[in-house]
Length: 53
Image (cartoon, rainbow, N blue to C red; front, side, top):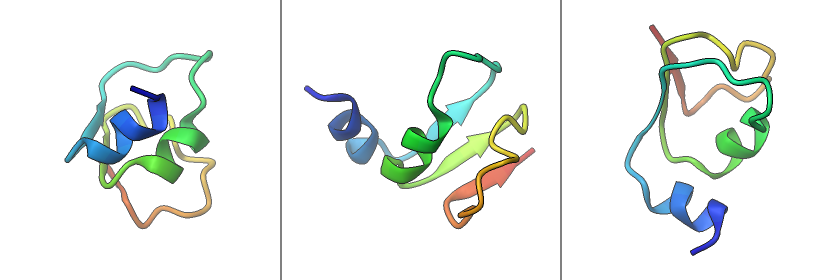
């Protein structure tokens, strides 16, 4: 299964640790909903599917 397919089929992506090698823009584009507990997606402009703790 491809990465974007896995993200699209998930109900929620939960970010609990900040990783510098992860493409958070890719995650935002393909995930239905994101719960960002570390605010690592603060630079992403389209925040319609992002909730921050």
